[in-house]
Amino acid sequence: MNNADNTTLSERKKESYKIFNEIAGTYDLLNHTLSLGIDIYWRNKLLKHLPIKETINALDLATGTGDVPLTLIKDERIKKITGLDLSKGMVDIGIQKVKKKNLDKKINLMIGDAVNIPAADNSFDLTTISFGIRNFSDPQKSLHDIYRVLRKDGRVMIMEFAIPSNALVRAVYFFYFRHFLPKIGNIVSKHKDAYTYLNKTVEQFPYGKDFLKLMENAGFKNLECRPLTFGIAMLYIGDKID
Ligand SMILES: C[S@@+](CC[C@H](N)C(=O)[O-])C[C@H]1O[C@@H](n2cnc3c(N)ncnc32)[C@H](O)[C@@H]1O
Image 1 (cartoon, helix red, strand yellow):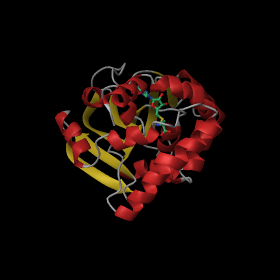
Image 2 (cartoon, rainbow, N blue to C red):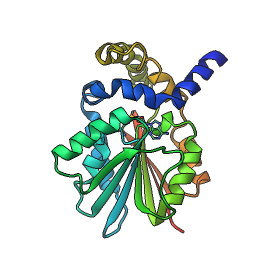
Image 3 (cartoon, rainbow, N blue to C red):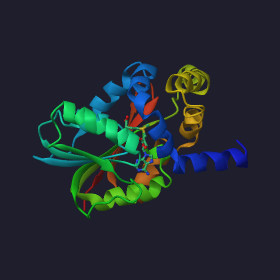
């Protein structure tokens, strides 16, 4: 990739929420069909690794249309979830979904930046991000801020795409991400290039040990990296122990 492409990509990351405003109406449909429903299975995985606490006050960053809060709320230890996203279009759809399920007393979705989290220190027991952090303008700063807003013994869980280690899986994955997904995504969302850069944001983002290093820099301990579905995605877990 040349410098011009790099500049375009970093500009697009800063403005990614604007593109999400434009594709919000088709986001859920495309997400579930293009992932063949695997995204739902992945989000459910979060429920298996909740922090060991009697009650949990959770924060979901880059919450989009609220699928993570709507998943987490299935565990009755989770009393309250705040979801933040920079895209009003995505949040508005999420609010409708939450209302429809009568969960608006427990789930509060609002506009907010994951890189400058509008919350006091030591406020949450759990912070989650699913498929959002690779688009943040400054992922390391966000991880520091997550550490700040978590309480002692709080946990962060982050799901993000990765590059599978198996050569055959990787070849199929690259074909899907580089050729199939951009074409179908742009057609269905009726957006000229919303899905064009998706593969680049994935291929350039640190994964595995490199991502754990960012979490370690922010102060997290008990670090874990769990491959999901042949390593197509990873679930990263870290604790704030002091
Ligand atoms: C791929 S969507 C993921 C949505 C949701 N977490 C899910 O799993 O379906 C990425 C979301 O990140 C949001 N986003 C990008 N940068 C952000 C930031 N700095 N703060 C908050 N949200 C951000 C976008 O607006 C978009 O809704």
